[in-house]
Image 1 (cartoon, rainbow, N blue to C red):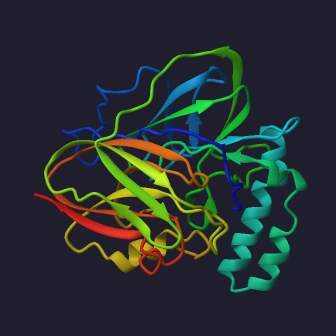
Image 2: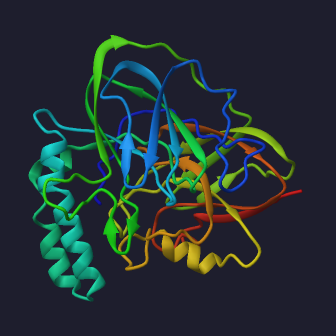
Image 3: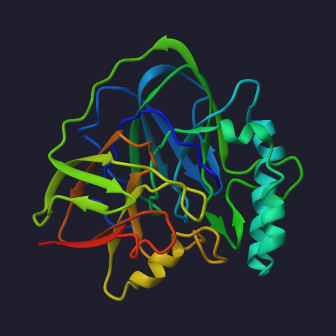
Length: 311
């Protein structure tokens, strides 16, 4: 899933202090921007069709039994949901099926069928991986244009954004951003994080329970072996969680990669951004063991898997 390096955005992702697995999260400190609620039910998004431009808080309420995310993608002119579903989603599914069958060369040829306009998609972040029953939210600045919300997590080897049934679309939703502006403000950070290809995830130490707003600075950006740039997601670890299994799960090219169920409980995160840009996300950390992890192959070797404990 090749991602074009993207323009600036600011993201806020949060999980509630009292939430446990299966309970919705609360966001009393959401930024003062227009709030767009996205509800995930099964393999469908329920969301508005049009919104104002400017600062926008996307709130992903995961009412399904599967882990999801909602990537915000700005589309080229004259391209919409129909073209994405007819010319992009089937190509990725064909390539994935061939990878699962061990036919890497044929998969490469399949991915070569992507339309030329695919390279012009601008991926604008959005709520990261979030477990069933949880809520994650992302605040971004959107220019007027046509966008898609997409989840490409898999179930039984099939991307959620692809539906093999004729005339039935996958987990994508078209969104028009109108020229009239909304209003909003930038979150104030209490913790600094830097992402880089050379040093991985560098973050201030977190040890105490509480609410943190984390500024994530993307020092650089590269396209990794799985055709995506580095990002960061937050996952709560339970006793017996395998970090090796978690790391392998983050590579969608693997048959079990990004396939439900997830090997741990995700509570949100930010998608990749271009070099020099900053994202903000807010989390309420309760006692337990956590990990920062990026959606890249072998994140530990890239220093993009870091665990920490909240006392």
